[in-house]
Image (tube, rainbow, N blue to C red):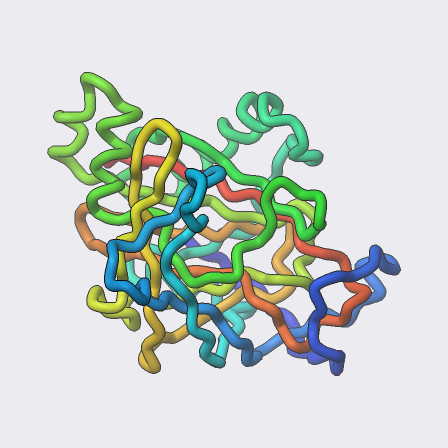
Length: 296
């Protein structure tokens, strides 16, 4: 499920990334940072009052915080998988990568266009590249843009999109009368992540090897929608965690992030991060993640 490319390792000296930046020169003029880097990642800190952690998806009720848990920052090494792609497998590490995936969708600004054009492409990618996959159900997507006016921006917080409880809820919620039978077989929640203005030189995505983050450091968090309550997971810091990124990720490359697997239980903590080599006049990252149920 991975392909290997050979890319020269280079670095770029730069001042730390700031919260605002300018649209810049052509991306081809940028010497893309490669190789291991270090960055401060934000990890889960439990609510001070000992209450159950929660997060409101939309505006919280009056007097309630958007989320009631905190964050603690730790600097970690983040290793570059560029040139090492074949070493990683979604069913072992919790993430896998693909190269050379073409798409007819280029703008990613119209949700119906995304559903009509890009969703079928994602379905094919999963059926062709996930061993055993027989059926794919796509339940949503998020476009993120590093722009103050964007609806959704990159998330700088280590997390996992689903838990065992919410995975079962997703199958029940989306699959109706088929859910009971589908839950008897193997089912996975896989996010298909790609840039839409690559190569990525700002706020790349980092992901941990699933095996290096113990279950004791994964904390269920109520994900409160207006009409229902789901569950995501916060990730505590562990010095055993091994973190990775794919330098200069391009538009024809895909990361498959496994959020849940009923068989192997590999799940992928992930977060955007600020690479200290990023210069403040480099273009902000734009990306799309498509969330799917994969059966079989």
